[in-house]
Image 1 (cartoon, rainbow, N blue to C red):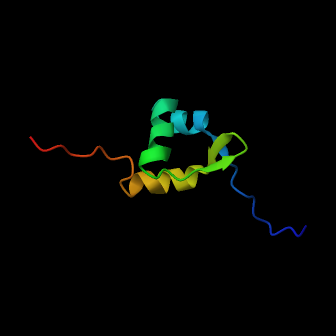
Image 2 (image 1 turned 180 degrees about the horizontal axis):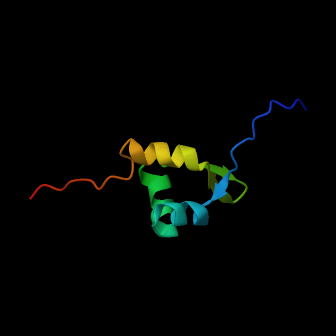
Image 3 (image 1 turned 180 degrees about the vertical axis):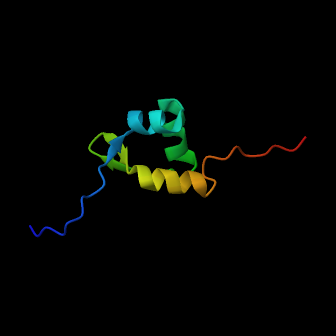
Length: 69
């Protein structure tokens, strides 16, 4: 295995993502299912890279959908 001098970003759990974003785990699972939060299923667990989660948030993925009154 060749070393490139770069450290790969680790995959983190739903619990870490929830803590990072200040939301509950159920919200993270809902966003994976319905809003396209970037995540990969590894075995039985969902994992993501925080840089991808942050990019998704900045792009408006976590924005509250407006409702018409």
